[in-house]
Amino acid sequence: MNKLSPLHIKMICAGLILAIAVGIRQSFGLFLEPVSTSLNLGRETFALSIGLVNLLWGALAPFTGALSDKYGLKKVVIFGTLTYALGILILSNADQGMSLIIGGVIVGMGLSGMGFTVILGAVGKFAPPEKRGTALGLTTMGGSIGMFLGIPVSGSLIQATGWSSAFFWLAIISLLIIPLVYGLVSKKINTNENNTRIESDESLKEVLNQALNSRHFILLVCGFFICGFHVNFIVAHLPAYISDMSLPKDVSTTALALVGFANIFGVAIAGRLGDKFAKSDVLVVLYSLRAIVFIIYIITPISIASTLIFTFTLGLLWLGTVPLTSGLVATFFGPKYMSMLYGIVFFGHQLGGFFSAWIGGKIYDFTGNYDIMWWFSVLLGIFAAFLHYPIKDKEIVIFGTK
Image (cartoon, rainbow, N blue to C red):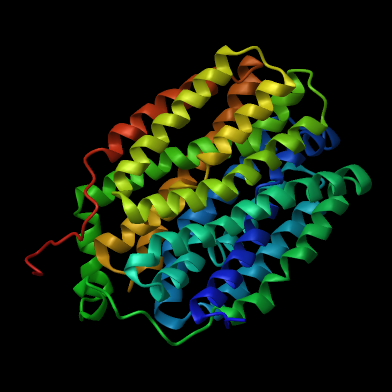
């Protein structure tokens, strides 16, 4: 039997960390209706809490990524995990809207230290460039598996124990991340890189200036904003939308779990395609297909079958953006500062997620439906495809560095 390589060990531990972290976070939409009803609040309040999770997760990601790049990821991930668990415990004991807001802020702070930016950065530094897309795709698959398994677990906990106790047990489960981080710790960083930046003496400030002056990098940030808008709108509001359409409550759990299940295959396929074709071209196709899937679901009579087909198809296109987008960051600037630079791109993603969760709740409370949000998501998908079209899948050279 062949012994697992160091890269495989890193990918397994990284995937399990993302499975726990993302699986728990992606189940928050299941809590929207019971929490709002129990605390006699409109949907906007807990939707805002979910949005703040995304906002803080993204806003702090560049900083936690920079700390991980400079000092190593073990302390960052452990601190992030403890903070994450604390935030979920606050949600568990929430008795008013302000408690939900505070809990959401702390959960987001925790996720910034053990979410995609830090974890994928660790894998990206270790993987050779010709395998990086596949490695990042397979690692991202952990988040998909977490969503597939975590949503039914959360749904069962809510039904069996109530939303408060369900949050408590999710906080306990999140602590399993701490022992897994030791499988990610390694002093070895890939140096077999055609991109000369990895061995250069470019400072963090110089690379950051190059990134912020790059049209391709800015377009990538804008495109990932739209990805976050799409993803968090579905996660935060689809369960409530399904209830509004008078479908059985268990359909929402099944629907979100199907997203996670299909995404297991979607991220693996996207990672492989990113190694064979230009990552930016794959992203153009992916966002275009998202817009088409949204349109078909909107114009088709809503039923259990149409909803499950929609979520499965959308799942194939779900987090496939992650290995492609993070891979482009590494292609642009090399893996040395990947966690920090991907953190900036990821902030765009989370900013989009914040607005879709919050505005979705606000529009629903004002209009009584989600029609505006559905059609706006279609337009954003088309716009995202156009944004990625001019992006070139090659190293960015600025200031005469070559």
